[in-house]
Image (spheres, rainbow, N blue to C red):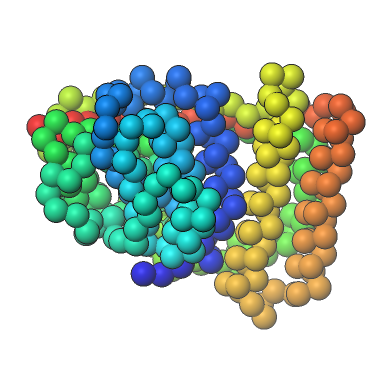
Length: 290
Ligand SMILES: C[S@@+](CC[C@H](N)C(=O)[O-])C[C@H]1O[C@@H](n2cnc3c(N)ncnc32)[C@H](O)[C@@H]1O
């Protein structure tokens, strides 16, 4: 359908890496009681699956389930098909799901609701659920982020990103985050759109690479997640703003990003602890089709 999100908003690795960390098996027992899904052969649809990290986690956590991911961004679907072999990924619109009524036992989404008109978002998921089926709407709420001092970015980087944010109108242009809802509005909307037994819960996904309980490969991924985000944001800015940005300045920023993450990885390898922490508070909204 398009590749707006992956080209101009968030790249494949930004989403895949951050969600792989957020839905790591270390947090499985925080999510599963909130999901409240039975351990039986379920048909699960993930709406707005992006590059597939949540679908991948669902495949590990519900090995008997048949998982379908749906998104309208082709680059995400290509990435997911290559990296997440256990699920099926389809192109489609969350506001007009390409499935008959009563097709799924559960539908799930992560950070998608705020981008889709609520009547269509909830209405379509209600329609494709079987009676008694479960709708799970996940969203990342305010978290806690303490950056490593060396990763904060220097004056030149800060100036560059200020210029980008002053010129970049992609969010408005592509209607991103057009339908935000508070923690109180979400369950009320779910009830209004026809779901019953609506509940909410929160799972904290805390990422601290220097924590001794974190295996080294995972700690490195936590550090590199920021690098993917910075580099893909730079590429998106260059695509969006083109000649309005000074190429030399942008390449200087790229060099700085590469250098600071290489330095942080070297510090990690040398046991030089920086204690950066990122805690995502994930809201899990749950409702049942009557
Ligand atoms: C913030 S991203 C989250 C992606 C994924 N759920 C994750 O957590 O990595 C929002 C996703 O919703 C998708 N999306 C937005 N509106 C959509 C629509 N109407 N139909 C299908 N996908 C949509 C975007 O393409 C993008 O992949």
